[in-house]
Image (tube, rainbow, N blue to C red; front, side):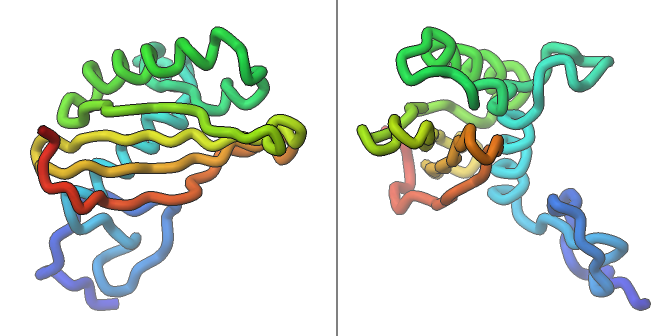
Length: 152
């Protein structure tokens, strides 16, 4: 196997996949994707999961079983802001909201829509997570870079 030494590698892409071109694993090759991956890790890490840093993480999965009018959902945005300022200061939270219709309430599902600003790159992005307590999962539904160049 010949490793491509001329390709820029920032960190391994998750989930890990073998790559014969850049080394043992496929890698994240640009800053935007690296920041997005770190942001998703922060959201999905459950506080206490890292023994040496028990405060790290938002613990998105713990909100799976909250009711639509739960005060815990209101606390989510505050926790996310604190975590971003401490662990990912290059990201500024613009908006985080749980979106659901009457049909979603009956099926116990919702979408978490997060809009954030990457200060270092001057771009606004949006990421949607599907929260489905029936399947007991959190999954990225959509991630997109906004056409807005700067947050005014």
